[in-house]
Amino acid sequence: MLIFDVKALEHDFQHANVKESFNNLYHCLGFITAIASSPAQIKPSEWIKQLMLNEDKSPQFDNDAQAKKFSLNLIAWWKLCLNTFDKGDTISLPETIALNDLNQPNQALFDYGIGYLKGYKWLSSIWQKKLPQSIPEAENSLIMLNLILARFVNEDEVAKNEPELYQQLPDMVSCFKSLPPLISAVGMLGKDLSEMENPVSEIVVPEFKKKTKLVGRNDPCMCGSGKKFKKCCLH
Image (tube, rainbow, N blue to C red; front, side, top):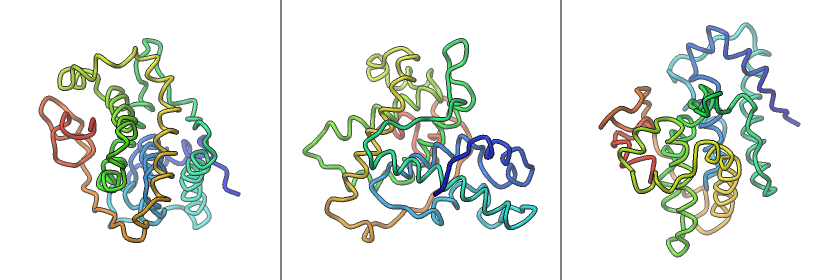
């Protein structure tokens, strides 16, 4: 049985070879959470490539055992997410993902938000194909989760570009408290949709265009879609 060890991953992500090859730890965890939440069963061999900064350059580890331990720990987080959604439980995020003393997102939460939004956008076409149009509440949960995560990434941009939606949000502390149950609700929705019509084998996983620039005024969304932020991950 795989056991997720965030402390071990924090240690691994301090190594120069890992820093050169992968996005930061919490970006990776957010991305993996989004993959586990989706209506498609994406294999680790597919999503691990998306975590790498350069797919043509494999990370160098001291030995095979270290490389295996690192990969299995990432997969353990994916499995933990899948099992949580399967049981209908609420996901427990690492304690390092939090608000700071000013009730603003800390770096880990900021990175997790960017990673999740990128993962969601990578598979957004699959979500749109699977979502039942007759149940608008299903899409609303996705919009709310993406809105809150986008707020953690760039609150000013959300307030400027989506003022009506922004006004519907509670304060930052309440948004953070709602994050685990919202993630779990979307994950359970993804599981339910995966068991409906349109077998996963018929779904084509889209190519992923990597972008690392953060959003600014009228900049492309941080998920890499090329669309403006207000036209992208909020919807």
